[in-house]
Length: 247
Image (cartoon, rainbow, N blue to C red; front, side, top):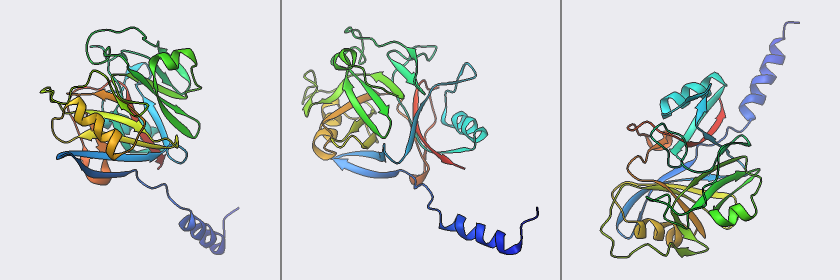
């Protein structure tokens, strides 16, 4: 049956009245004289997911992720690398995507930043999110729809990681995630200059007020945020976190 002009007009009005999902609130922020870019999302409203492979192949870049999502009728509005990975880009620790675990939890201390315990897990559940210390996660795993383990913890129950040094000289570009006490408000942050772990941790603790925050990575830190003109390129990536809306 061919729609009438009136039916088409009513459909267009209804479409115009439907609110579109807003792009994540990304903005420049400063803390203790250092510059950062922060993107704030709402776990109860935004469609946030983790991405690693498609068709058995690592996605590896924001550009490829956009292509994959476009084929599904989705648009990427935000993305960031979301955890450390091996040379073949397998996740170093726990990885869960769409409820399916493809890499196990690693609970033992080890080399590098990942093994600088306490480390933790970024967990996305239905309508909420959490950053959970690894041993706490192992003792009582929540129903994560998506999860990525990384380390070290930047903030744990309101306190900085015990190994962080105020006078450290180790500076790198860094990115990470913190979740506010409401369990909904998620802050994804990347430094726009080289910072220490102490500086990065105090940003989450003192400025963003997240009781728990997790380090994602350093030299490979990348951000996709069209709302502020960011589409970083560089090293091939492993796990990524992103927000999507229908095209």
